[in-house]
Length: 236
Image 1 (cartoon, helix red, strand yellow):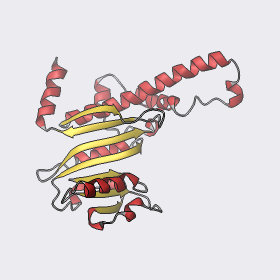
Image 2 (image 1 turned 45 degrees about the horizontal axis):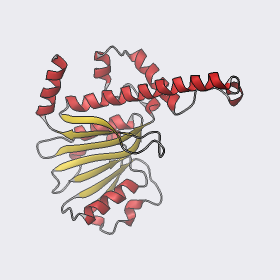
Image 3 (image 1 turned 60 degrees about the horizontal axis):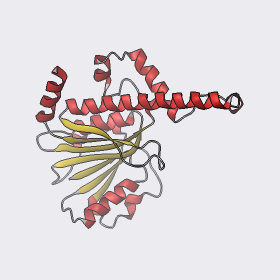
Image 4 (image 1 turned 180 degrees about the horizontal axis):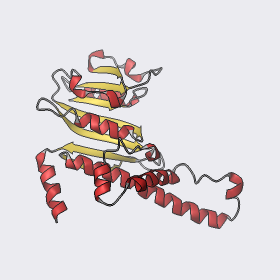
């Protein structure tokens, strides 16, 4: 298995993946560290066995997985922690484009965030949204509302001083709307994965006390079986 850490930054997640490979003695497995920036103090440089980790400096949107040498690996697992906005969609497309007869993106686990930075032209769930009545205009409104639960309501501190009770109730309502917008975008991504042969779901991966962006997309490639089941469910 080749573990692909997309938008890896300093590579802390990659570092612990290499520890997993070493501790479990997963022979012929490796970690591919992907990031477009040059960062200092990279954790993957501290890996003892350099043969199991490789860093590639490239934008996810420009990465062609079919051109990467995975050696003896026959399956890929794509992972990412807090892949902002549209980068999540680019990562999903990148992993799915890797699927050939020789190798499969068998697993996907992406911790999502920054939904207000999603772009319509890169979003993988557009078809599902459109099929459910979400227009391009509605899409743009939804991604703006998504910021309400994390970025505030845009009012100054002085403006918020007026009427504490009313302000609390307003803020609570705005946060609820923001979370619903985020989950709508993520569910559209799940439906995209399902339509491409993945058994996919959303999952809480940590308590909200650690991070309010505590949702991840989890997908396992099941092939035509999942597509057939999805088609039956849709017809019913």
